[in-house]
Length: 142
Image 1 (cartoon, helix red, strand yellow):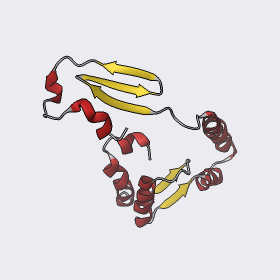
Image 2 (tube, helix red, strand yellow):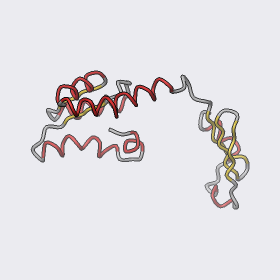
Image 3 (cartoon, helix red, strand yellow):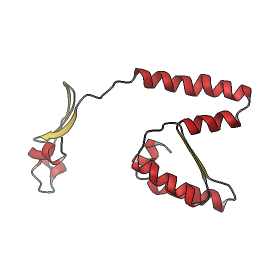
């Protein structure tokens, strides 16, 4: 499961994967290294289990990899996957800067923390749906 696929309108493909595995004669296996709970992960877990699949999340996923790997592969996983992930997560910011995106006239303004980036638009045609874009920041709940 990747955020990219799930966030780009291909969620149906993620949910169909266990069906495709079974149709091809394989047991679907969901292995998620991050144990952060998420409604989509819950839905995906159900889809795998409904097809008789196996699900390993968080420490269970690491344990499953350790169980299957020989000494060389276990060393590779620790050195090039687990340790870099742990290092990255330990250095991650506790919280992200505030984010806002809104229109000022025809221009799109994107603000992260104290920094702002403006995308200038040349015509009014882009917002020809008749909406008043002056309050889009409020519409987005930002």
